[in-house]
Image (cartoon, rainbow, N blue to C red; front, side, top):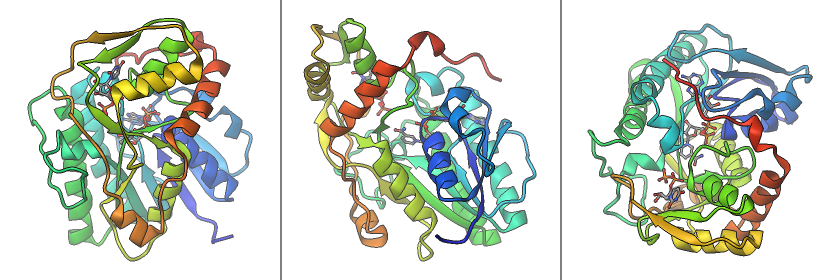
Length: 323
Ligand code: NAD
Ligand code: UDP
């Protein structure tokens, strides 16, 4: 095993953060999970609470915090459109003020710090698939801007702390990821379709369903992120995602097939600024990290549907106001 490190995971109780915590605890590291539980709940990490190398802190990253750590995974930020648009000002504060607080901490204690950025920095892309060199097409005043521009500003902060203060940074641009522990009411397409199919409700396609996304299973994603964090030669940004591209209608049909649900597809209005297509160019991740996804959408959906069948939906609530 590699050297044991003290590692902070912000947003550590969320969908992706909880899996990163789990993996790092299993690898023997000393893990601090920090979360304000805006879009998550303790049940995501309750199985780790008895482990001697796991600690849970309730804190909001828009406020400073002083910890002694070797690495930071900054995963804290609402990620689903419904969640990040719920309180857009708080969303951009989380990306900007949160990054400033954590970069300051990383500078003080000499920690390496990774930012969970997003394919949303490419906006509604004119270049397809999207390489890291593409600068994006984001509407700075649209409903997605609080997230997209917050994440873009966070990338700027990470790169400037590196240039000016020599902070050891990593930036990963994550493309749509799904799997067990997604919030069932987050409104994202995979969680919506599976929940609707399992509860016998019609599947809501926004627009005509011809828009595309490329869906990565969470285990592949977590592996890619951990590889980037521990790669010494390049700070990023690096795209991590699955290049398999599907229309939203194809996704709906696959969910119906795999659940055996007797439900219809119904069309609703397409939200403003909804990207028409998205697919990662992962040439860089393959070359630098020797990483590529191994789980197909069909395989990943089967695992995710099993998890959705196992949970009690009444234990999950939409976010509460959080200023
Ligand atoms: P999630 O909502 O499940 O997790 C985010 C976590 O951050 C939650 O536990 C939430 O309570 C916490 N949080 C939010 N604001 C906070 C604050 N101010 N202080 C402390 N904690 C706070 O979402 P996720 O899908 O696990 O996303 C994790 C990260 O990955 C996010 O930064 C997101 O932008 C990024 N990302 C995810 C995807 C994806 O498809 N899942 C795609 C691109 C980027
Ligand atoms: N979508 C849909 N029905 C839903 C939820 C989402 O058709 O019930 C569409 C949405 O309009 C978008 C795509 O699915 O085109 C992915 O949406 P999601 O919110 O999961 O993530 P995004 O990639 O847009 O951030």
